[in-house]
Each structure stands twice: as structure tokens, then as C-alpha cells.
Amino acid sequence: MMSQDDLKRAVAKAAIEYVPADCIVGVGTGSTANFFIDELAKIRHKIRGAVASSEASAKRLQGHGIEVLSLNEAGDLPVYVDGADEITRHMHMVKGGGGALTREKIVAAASKKFICVCDASKLVDVLGKFPLPVEVIPMARSSVARQLAALGGQPKLREGYTTDNGNIILDVHGLQIMNPVELESALDHIAGVVTNGLFARRAADVLLLGTPEGVKTMTA
Ligand code: 5RP
Image (cartoon, rainbow, N blue to C red; front, side, top):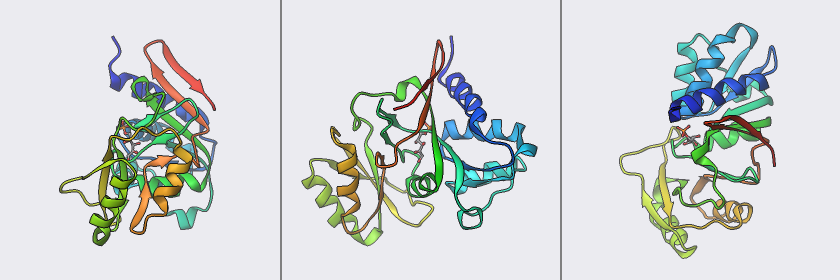
């Protein structure tokens, strides 16, 4: 029987097909992205380098001898490969379980194509069962929490956690997200919110879904 890691490895391998020769690749964060980094190492002589969405991914890339560039140096990227905590058939996602949502959203926004790599457990009909991560400037913690509660969620501080940007994360439980594009915008308008984990305005372009029957390729 295939384990969840086998499924993640299979989608990471499949994502390599989307990496053009001689390019700079946008690289996500998390266990599935880590498998992708390991696959990228095998073709490292065919690419110019990578832009990482976290310190952890940058370290792993460098450990494989892949050059890590800043987004400012690299400019726009042809492709961004990352996992998700939840994804719908419309390619809307909840991300940020690993806490890297802000840099992920920045690198994704600068990339022409977003390739999402997931095992089958991540595909859902409605987003929100996975608590929605919201990165917040520390001084705004309670006021943002109150506004998130007013929107119907139960925000919980991610204890003992600081993002790569020096901020905190509130994980919002109990949401049933029927309109991800609207909620993403509404959350971004709360003063003190840096980024929220809804990736709906800029959805994935391709989903590579790892199933026991093989990798399924889906588009919106
Ligand atoms: C990190 C993320 C990850 O993409 C998400 O948490 C999925 O991780 P994994 O591949 O380990 O399941 O958004 O901030």
C-alpha cells in the first residue's frame, strides 16, 4: 500500500515536468515541497536557481547545491511549485499550515504558473475544516482576534511560533468558507493582518493530486 509520503513523492516527481530548462523556479514550503526540492536537486544543472518561500526551503535548496536568489534579483518567475493544506476543484486553497503563507503568497504572485502538489487527502468540497492561518503584526493580536471572531471564526494563537517575518499566527477554527475570494479580500482589510492563508484570488493553475491510482492532473 502507498503511504502518504509515497503520494507526495509521486506528485513532486510529476511537478518536475513543469520546470522549464534554464529557469529560476519558485519553491514552496512544507513536506510536499521538500520532496519537490529533492527532485529538483536531480536536475540542478538544468536550472539557474530558485526563489524560496521560507528560510527552511532556502536551507534545503542550498544543502542540495541549488543557488537561492532573492525575488528582487530574480524578477518574475515562470513557475511556482507548492503544497496546500486544503484545495477545492476550483483551485482555491488554504495554505500556511507551515507558517510560510506571506512569502508563499508573494512568490506565487510573481509567478506565471502555480503548480499545486498534494496528496489526495487535501482535496475538499468546502474550505475551512483546516484552521485558516492568519499572519498578524504582534501589537494587533487582540484587536485582529476580535474582528476574526466577529466574522464567525474562533481564532487561536499559534503558541511559541514566530514567522520568518517576525510576526505571529492566529489559526482561525470553525469557518465554512463558501466565498473564498471575498473572504480573502475582507481579511486583508483588517488593520494588522499581514496575510491570510486563503489563496483564492490567485488560485492554482494546475493541481497534481497524488492518489493510490496514480497522479491526477486537474485544472479549474
Ligand atoms: C506552508 C504551507 C504548505 O504548503 C502546507 O502547509 C502543506 O504542507 P505539507 O506539504 O507538509 O502538507 O502552506 O506554509
